[in-house]
Image 1 (cartoon, rainbow, N blue to C red):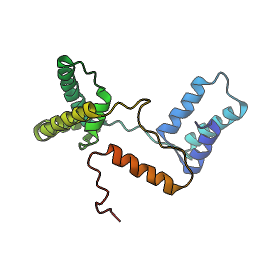
Image 2 (cartoon, rainbow, N blue to C red):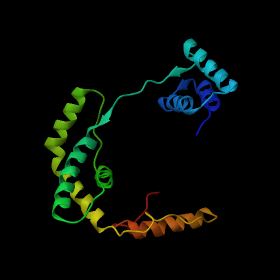
Image 3 (cartoon, helix red, strand yellow):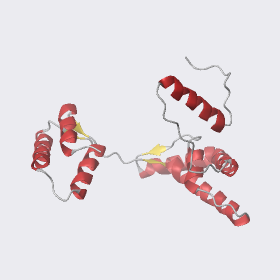
Image 4 (spheres, rainbow, N blue to C red):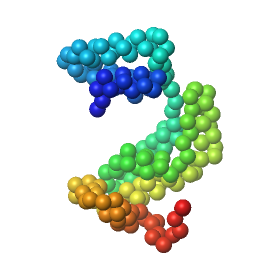
Length: 185
């Protein structure tokens, strides 16, 4: 969490105000019962810098990843099939995320671009989408139910110990982990 003063300092130093910085200032202002004199002064400095062009507000870029809606539609359909024929309850978000991590993104900034990406995906990628969602469901159904959620790294000193723990976690959780495979340099 950042303070208004820190955000304004960074904006003045960098010369721009990102949408994330703007949202954080808004969140602070919305949740604070009362702003301090320092916060008001920082906001005043920011407004002045925005008006003079010393700081430029980076516009929010509107874009979507069309692949998300296509994967979600496929996942909803497949999850409904599984849940209607078994006692299993599946986590739709886990399944969609698993599949999305194995598919190319299809970003668009306009409705025309989104329509093009949808058509492209339906013509060229639908079999791959279906396959990845099916694999995601299979992986979800095979995962062991660990009490307390995912495995956590133990707190230890030294990067070598952490690297060792990561290696152990990868061996336990990565289905295709090959410790003898050549590593990129």
